[in-house]
Amino acid sequence: MILTLTINPALDLYSRVEKVFPGEKLRCEKAKIDPGGGGVNVSRVIHRLGGETTALYTRGGYTGEIFKDLLEKEEVKQDTVEIAGSIRQNIAVTETSTGELYRFGFPGPSLTEIEYQDVLTKLNLYKKADFWVASGSLPPGVPEDFYARVAEKARKDDVKLVLDTSGKAYSGILREGAYLLKPNMNELEDLVGEKAEDEQQQKELLLQVLEKYPIEVIVLSLGSKGALLATKGKVRHFPAPAVVPISSIGAGDSMVAGMVFSLSRGDELEKAILYGLACGSATIKSPGTELLKQEDVEPLFNKLLNEVQLNDLT
Image 1: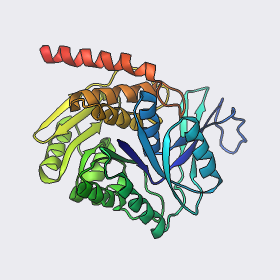
Image 2: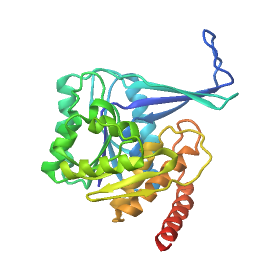
Image 3: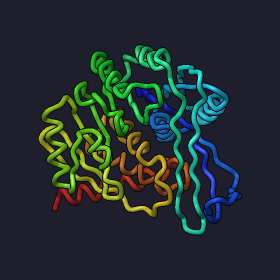
Image 4: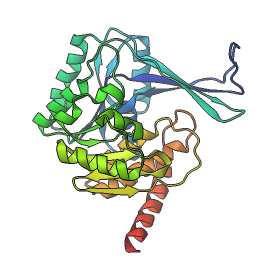
């Protein structure tokens, strides 16, 4: 069983316009609207891959009703904590004359202590889950150590926590521990407070973290260069499949979804990271806020699997 947690979900609006001009009224195409936010996207992708998840998220206002209806249309199982504020909206627009993508993110509604505590309490219903996937930013009003509190509950309930966040939302996570963290290069600095200039420094830093703190796995996303898989005493680089990039929106969430889905089937870590990279690349080749198509994943995964096996033999 996989539970995803999104404390700051968002309605993602995507459109296209020929040219972006300052001060002008821009005539955009009809907007596409998707339910978004880290954990929600992870659930949506796992569902597309054929897996079972429950998406736990905060919901409020008229945007909350739209959000719920959109998830129902995708047949994603959902559980909610009701809040007073409305779910935020994020906007992405492609400038068709250049192909440039402009993204505008908003902070989300401020949560009261009662509301975010309700989220933590709701986790008690999912103690038998195999994985909790906590992903995304924190909204106003939620303490910086919120994910550390989630990690504490996961440790006590013997649930594997996968965390994908950024900035101060990493506060306390090293102390509490987690099964798997998935930072990118900038987020690694958020996590440990140190900057790694090249791959060798990144590897050394990852090994230090795993030696000092109760973290089992770190997957460092390197964008088009793939990812580093770090376990205690070992770091290995895995390439990403080459695709023509169209939009990076949701690629990180798709990578997490692919890894967790693969692990939930009993796959080894090395195979899971390749599957995650294939899922991330499948989303990158999709336009706007569109997530991957299942039929795009397997060819990319099989290509990666063959490349890695060939490299192991040479």
